[in-house]
Structure formats: C-alpha cells, structure tokens
Image 1 (tube, rainbow over the protein chains, first blue to last red):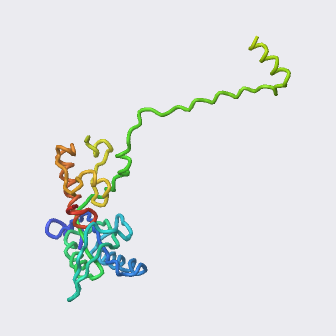
Image 2 (image 1 turned 180 degrees about the vertical axis):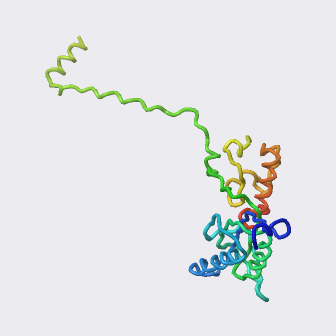
Length: 165
Length: 65
C-alpha cells in the first residue's frame, strides 16, 4: 500500500492509550512478568508502540474484587497493579479488550485515551499539606565560658573579707 | 482551599496519583464540590474522571463508612 492510497477511507488513525491492569495475586511472583509479556505481545500484535510502562506491584485494593473462572468465584483484596502507555491504531483497542477479558490471570483492566506527556504529578501529596512555618528559632551563640585561674584559699578569704567589711 | 492544581502547576490528572486525588474527596470517599475544591470547571471534570477511574481500579473506595 503506498502513501497516496493510504488516505481518508483506509487511513490508519493512531492514538495514545493507557492500559491499567490488575493481575490476580494467586499468580506467583516469577510468573507476573510472563503475564505482562502476554499483554505486551498483544499490543505489539495490534500494531502498537510503547511509550511508558509501570511494572506490576502488589497493591492493596480499596474494596474486594470478584472474579469468576468457570463455576468458581473468588474474591481478592490485593493484586499486582501495572500499567502500559502505548500508541496504536484506533481499531486495535477492541482486540486488546477481548484479549484482556479472556485472560483469566487478569482480575480487572481499564483502557482509555490519554496524552503522550507524563501525566503523573511531580509533587508528592504530603508537601501540599506541609504547614508553613513563619519563623525559625535562631540559635544564639553560647556565651563563651569565663575562664578563670584556679582560686587559692588565700584569695578566697581576701575576697570574703572585702565583702563582709 | 485554594486551587491546588494551579498552585503546584499540575497540567494533567492521573488516576494513579491516589494521594493527589485524596485531596479532592471527603472522608466518605465522595468527590468534593467545586465550591470546596476551588478548581476550574475543566480541572474539576478531569479530577472527577480520574477519581472514577481510580475507584473502578480499586485504588480509591466508592464509599467509606
């Protein structure tokens, strides 16, 4: 297909997508990478190119999620959460969606259109809450210790006499 | 509550930034109104979408008792 023919009707529209996924916690840690590899190959097969990726990490879920494989229903309160940002033709999304749905090791997934730029906020939330301090306590230099020569008994008596007289 | 996003020069809202999104939900897990967040309409829509994505993915709760 040449460039001229590749217009209007059969023009391949590329968009930036992000896929987020939860891998069931029953998958052993060594096999998580393999499950991610499957998703990656599915994206590549659909003609996608990767932009950014977040490696799956065990995450506690805010609520229990249910998954049904055959007749067996299981509930999970944690999962390996990872994400991939990629560019792919619009038509490829449905295929990836099908793949993710059919994959039993994937508890839940989300695909949505995003932007190429980094979307994560640079600042950490705790810095937002940080209390502004109006003033800082200045450290005052310690008064240099008065050095005095060792007092003799005679001097002491003399000084006492001076006071009492 | 001043506009956190403008103050910190945040252009995009990501559903994975749970700590940031938590600034815009109340202790019950509901999204705060614009009156309280002080965001622009566009920012508020982006925050709402991100909170909903985060809820679906189990990063934020739908409700918190």
